[in-house]
Length: 135
View 1: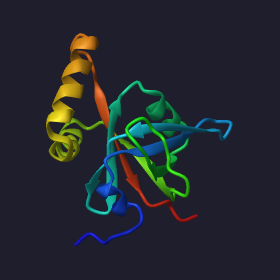
View 2 (view 1 turned 90 degrees about the vertical axis):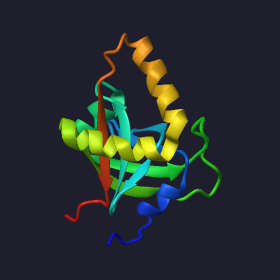
View 3 (view 1 turned 135 degrees about the vertical axis):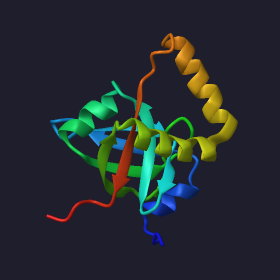
View 4 (view 1 turned 180 degrees about the vertical axis):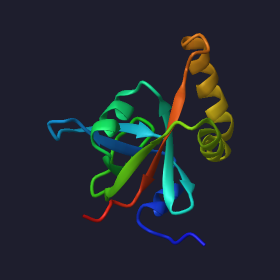
C-alpha cells in the first residue's frame, strides 16, 4: 500500500508549480496538473516542452502548491523530487488516465484545444516524480 509523504500529499492540490532547473541552476516554475501514482506523482506535458528538455539535463525538480495562474501563496512549502520522463506508449497512457480521471472535463477541453492548435500533432509525455534520490 502506498505511503503518505509530503510528495504524495500534493495530490490534494488542483495545481502545483513545477520548478525544473536550467544548466545554470536557475529554477523555471510552471503551473501544472498533478496526479498520484502510488508513491509517485505524475505530470503530463508536451514532449518538446522546456520542462522535458530541462529534466533531460537535470532530473531534480521542486513542487509547490499554487493557483491556476502559478501564483504561490506566501509560506507555501516546496517538496523536492526527481523526475523521470515516461515516453513508453502503454505506460504513458496508463499514467495519463490518472490525470484524466482527476481533471475530467477540464482535461478533455484543454487537450482538445491543444490538439486543434497543433493540428493533431500534440505528442505528450509523462513526468513521473519520486522523492529525491539518495547520494
